Amino acid sequence: MERQMIIASTLDELRAARLLLDGRVGLVPTMGYLHEGHLSLARRAREECDSVVATIFVNPTQFGPTEDLSKYPRNLKGDLSLLESAGVDLVWTPDNETIYPPGFSTWVEVEGLTKPLEGASRPGHFRGVTTVVAKLFNAVQPQAAYFGQKDAQQAAVIRKMARDLNFPIEIVVCPTVREADGLAMSSRNSYLSPEERQAATVLSRALTAAKSAHEHGERNADTLRRIMSETLAAEPSAQMQYVSVADYDTLEELQTVMGKTLLSMAVFMGKTRLIDNFVIGE
Ligand SMILES: Nc1ncnc2c1ncn2[C@@H]1O[C@H](COP(=O)(O)OP(=O)(O)OP(=O)(O)O)[C@@H](O)[C@H]1O
Ligand SMILES: [Mg+2]
Image 1 (cartoon, rainbow, N blue to C red):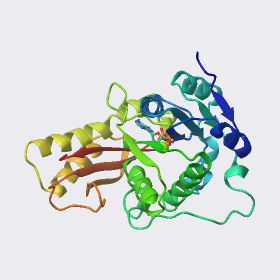
Image 2 (cartoon, rainbow, N blue to C red; image 1 turned 120 degrees about the horizontal axis):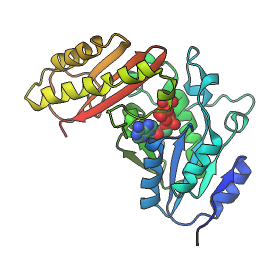
Image 3 (cartoon, rainbow, N blue to C red; image 1 turned 180 degrees about the horizontal axis):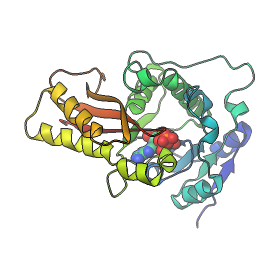
Image 4 (tube, rainbow, N blue to C red; image 1 turned 30 degrees about the vertical axis):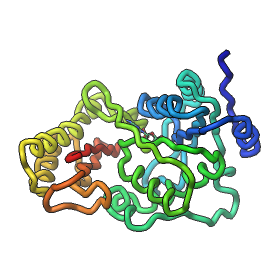
């Protein structure tokens, strides 16, 4: 018999519903406005766990002062029906006051790994991410938690946090889900004008060009960075923020590509900031 998906909003409701879940519990944290990327995490959790919990919370502390939190896309009704069809057992939709009670002043911060790339471009972003994810871990107490490779540095930072803080939670990183033309799915893609949407394929095209040069024997990291930045520069509506060729584990920029390597970039398409990455040399 199909069980009905439970929707909890307060912390008490969440805790009461969590007590009824058996076995291995998988957590899928999201900011909502769900797409196939999110659903791939929920389906993977469904396969690997006895019970699946998803959270929808647009976390204010991971947005910078110039990033428009108030315009973040929302569609709670649509999200709930997608989660239900992905087989989720319990959805938690906490409000801001539950996650950040009045006078809130306790933060979780991962040093080192959060410095480069997204951390350099978005000061304070990862402090917001790790704080909210630690709170979700404490509230839901999952055995496994599912994150997307699209946010490669976030996945690395959360894995480090879980290890450093002894969370008994397996961190599972799932492949990036893409549109047919290669654009990585993202809730923020909904901000793109039709012209920007077309031009946004430049991110995956730049990554593909660098990957292919690597496959043909190119090991000079500067050359790979140049291939990516030149591909981006050829697209007039794209404004590169960074391109990176970094060690997969430490995220330090490389001179020479040897082992597992993260190619990554952040690009403005008009006012919309997009990120994407490929892993090479596996
Ligand atoms: N295309 C994708 N493929 C796989 N996982 C994804 C994809 N996009 C997002 N995720 C993962 O879904 C989880 C929730 O992400 P989030 O709700 O921020 O979605 P998002 O599309 O990245 O939104 P935004 O663009 O605003 O950051 C994260 O673990 C993220 O890595
Ligand atoms: Mg995101």
